[in-house]
Length: 153
Image (cartoon, rainbow, N blue to C red; front, top):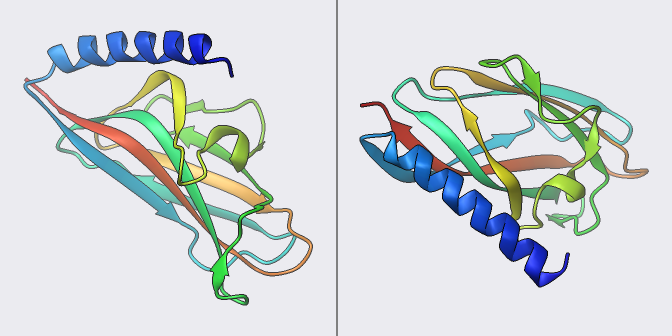
């Protein structure tokens, strides 16, 4: 993405974030991490949830992923997972269909900047489903949602 376009997205995200932060008594950095319950077999599917705490709404600004191959004992730098995420608080999906993680999550070095921050209501959860499209080993997927807790007034 050209630097000017990225700067424009970041500027809009910053404006929205500041507006949301101004509505809260306190905003603190926080990160929620989802991990598959076990290594997902080649061609296998998974489903799990990530509970958002009851004390504050959560504003997602960035997303990262990591894929660990327990057979090789190393990170998989060319992952082939697809995911769908549903916000139970708003009953909305993040994507229109399962989407490759490397298209909507950063690689751990460069986090994926959401074009617009995503607000997730306190005491809701994210239901995460997906598929390991790898042709060989079972792998463990970690998804990190990076942002801030927004404590109510």
